[in-house]
Image (tube, rainbow, N blue to C red; front, side, top):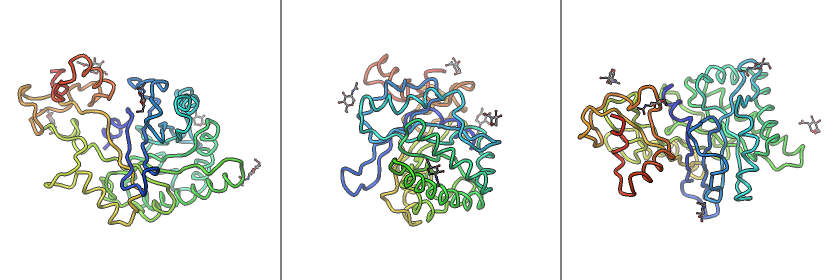
Length: 315
Ligand SMILES: *[C@@H]1O[C@H](CO)[C@@H](O)[C@H](O)[C@H]1NC(C)=O
Ligand SMILES: *[C@@H]1O[C@H](CO)[C@@H](O)[C@H](O)[C@H]1NC(C)=O
Ligand SMILES: *[C@@H]1O[C@H](CO)[C@@H](O)[C@H](O)[C@H]1NC(C)=O
Ligand SMILES: *[C@@H]1O[C@H](CO)[C@@H](O)[C@H](O)[C@H]1NC(C)=O
Ligand SMILES: *[C@@H]1O[C@H](CO)[C@@H](O)[C@H](O)[C@H]1NC(C)=O
């Protein structure tokens, strides 16, 4: 699933919370990735569209297990102030994870109490340093039974540290969220500790997309199918799994991808869903088009442009 991780690193996402208890509770959040160069600038985000903006993705140092902002420190440091200029009420969260190659670091970190503490303390410190009001853990994805068990312990200790820090400072408690797979079992078949997630997190961002990927499927497919009567790779199925496993619906925030996939079609005239293809349209580049690229394309070609044009334009 490494290719999935790559795909995800790049865009603004919008989230909508399922079944809010009232209109004020509706979460309209967006992700912004400081490491994606094709992204819009932080100053171009229209903050008034959002209740929460989530800034990713902090890395974890494999020696110290402290947070590392790598070369994006400037972007993280200006994020909160910049987005609040347009909308002072928008709430910002710092997201950790979602980076290629960090999986083994996270596995080591969660398996050792000392490393977990170093990680947790550092996450709170960095969030406060740059004015974030919350923390988001975006590990795609814990694989094994022991990963799932240890992640439960991490969440418990992390929440306790967040509570303690708030008691011991003038700040209000940090919001605490995570990004999770669309269903309760990750691709390797291990199941999240749903009880811990419900108990310690304010909510989860469900990655309800990437059901069909150019690098893995030789036919075009739907990125974020809401339903698929023929299979389990769809949002309806995944959300039902979460709710059936006991997670309250008001802790589920649905993530919508704001990017499109690009396949190399075998026949440029056959550009329907399910058309034969030979992998990504651009083998050396991204497998997908960013929101900005799609928008630019629509501006160039006019509002009636068919989405399928994007899939064939590089043939
Ligand atoms: C930002 O979003 C608000 C709320 O939808 C809208 O009224 C405004 O026109 C947008 N501003 C820009 C520059 O797009
Ligand atoms: C991790 O931390 C160590 C010790 O502070 C430092 O020497 C190293 O350069 C860091 N690694 C990365 C990739 O930042
Ligand atoms: C509480 O805050 C004080 C002063 O900021 C600090 O020295 C101390 O380590 C903190 N204690 C805990 C448990 O975080
Ligand atoms: C897709 O097609 C390409 C070219 O024909 C081939 O190299 C690749 O192995 C195929 N991938 C899958 C997942 O079938
Ligand atoms: C493919 O992607 C690479 C890397 O992003 C880019 O330099 C190149 O121009 C792209 N090729 C086409 C045909 O778009």
